Amino acid sequence: MVKRSRTDYDAVVVGAGPNGLAAAITLRQAGLTVLLIEGKDTIGGGMRTAALTLPGFHHDVCAAIHPMATLSPFFKSLQLAEYGLSLIYPPIAAAHPFDNGQAAVLKHDLTETATRLGADAAAYQRLIAPVVRDWSSLADDLLAPFHIPKQPIPMIKFGLKGLLSAERIAQRFKTTEARALWAGMAAHSMLPLSYLSSAAIGLVLSAAAHVKGWPVVKGGSQQLADAMAAYFTAIGGEIRTGFQVQSTNQLPAAHAVLFDVSPKQLLQIAGSHFSPFYEKQLEGYRYGPGVFKMDWALDGPIPFTAAQCRQAGTVHIGNTYEEIAASEQMCWQGKVSEKPFVLLAQQSLFDETRAPAGMHTAWAYCHVPNGSTVDMSAIIENQVERFAPGFKKRIIGKHAMNAAQMQAYNPNYIGGDINGGAIDIRQLFTRPALRWSPYRTSAKGFYICSASTPPGGGVHGMCGYHAARQALKDLF
Image 1 (cartoon, rainbow, N blue to C red):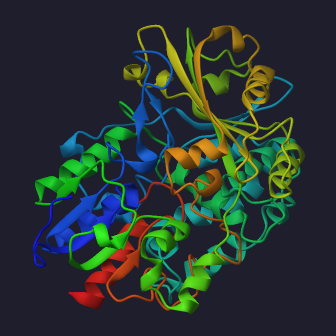
Image 2 (image 1 turned 180 degrees about the horizontal axis):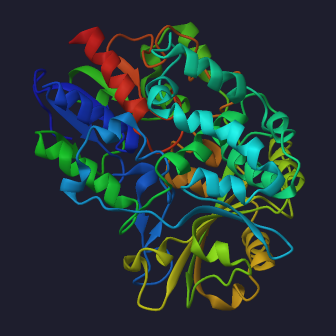
């Protein structure tokens, strides 16, 4: 790296994932000189798109569907459409097929979604409608570190549900359809459904579909990263790629350094600057299950038996509540399920830029024990074939990454954990350490802004935004 004077940058941000980009933008908007450093040759972190299978097929390497992108207060403050971002909303946000050939659905219309659940229509309305109604009041408080809420009443009402286990919430439903649909939403937490707070993500994701939808980024998730980068450079920010930071000695001097990295990486890069107590806290940070990720090039759409699945951007494959709960529990016991819960996205049904004419892409992953190297390819394909007979015959190319390979692709994914650490009740409010501000480290001027800080994983940029606001308050 070129040596620079000690006054060249007010702030340096290490890591250009969604949170690093958000932090850099927030600091630059405040008038600071900002350098954003990315270890890979392309920016994006969990928002990259690549030709993983065959030429002409564009696959999202990690994040594929973006329910939080349109609800994030930070993203809403940017005019990214002016920088090339285009979002596509599938007619069905998520579908959940069953062995009998039917499917439950999550649609934008809350009443229609509830009505399709039959005897559980009223129970679903009682659970989700208040979150949808109060979302404008909840968003700033939910997507933030622990604090006295601006709108305490809506937050208290949400907390009374969100801090429960998904298992406890499932007891409100009578039908197989409602219980399974709920299990699929809650399983995004990557927690056993019996754990406290496993309901929170299920509530947020369900409400997100009814508030706005679950969009696909036209052209691939990389387009979201590129739009953020274009905005950042347009307002005077500087980006440098292809530089993997191993030590703070490699960085140009700055008043503030913000790290979009996991606690494990932060210790490796800057551990010598930290107090023994803070260092011990970071060493005790816990990571959750990993993921086994697959991408396919197909010579046609996935032939799901249930028609609703052929109109859905996301398909939750797991059959019943009981089956999903069992597979998620096994991950935490270090075991691999023969019938895992599979999250599948079929972006090319709605975005013709993803594959050659008449062809399609498919994207999927299942949860596995942290760091697992077990090949889940056949198991995942069997799960898809189970609900879409003939799927395997349509595969003309494939690509897979186990949990260890996911970490090699993105060092933030420790053991393949794409959430940046377990989001259980013990780490819900103490990510990555119990401190007055979770973004401050024990070293003045050093901050952490990754998904290992509140509000956690997902493409929303709020971790980076809040960390940058803390740095501005402390130093500038």
